[in-house]
Length: 101
Image (cartoon, rainbow, N blue to C red; front, side, top):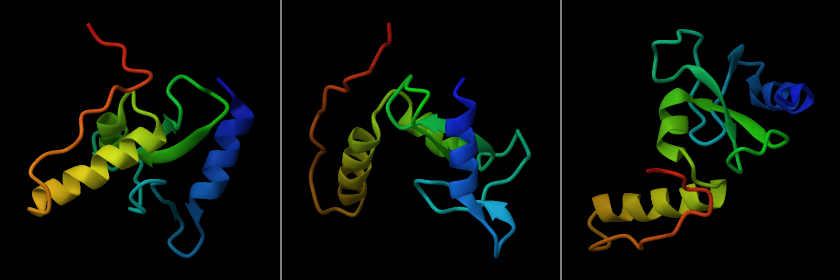
C-alpha cells in the first residue's frame, strides 16, 4: 500500500465547505457507513497501480472494476447516450487490465 498516494487522495477529495469527502468520478458526498453504496473507497485509476489512487464511492468503484479511468469514462459516456436513446449500442472495448475467469 502506498500511504503517501492515499494521503494525497484524501487531501484532494476533502470538501471543506461540506466537511466531507467527495467522489472523484461523481462528485457525490461520501459517507463512513461501510454498508452504504456511497461509502469511501480508494480506487486505483490504473488497476493495481498503488501510486495513483483516488477516493470514490463504493458503488462507482464496483462499476469501474478492472477498467482504467479512460476506459471507464468511455464506457459510461456511451452507456449514458444509449440510455438516452442517442445511440443503438455501445462500442465493445477490450479492457487492458480485465482479469476474469
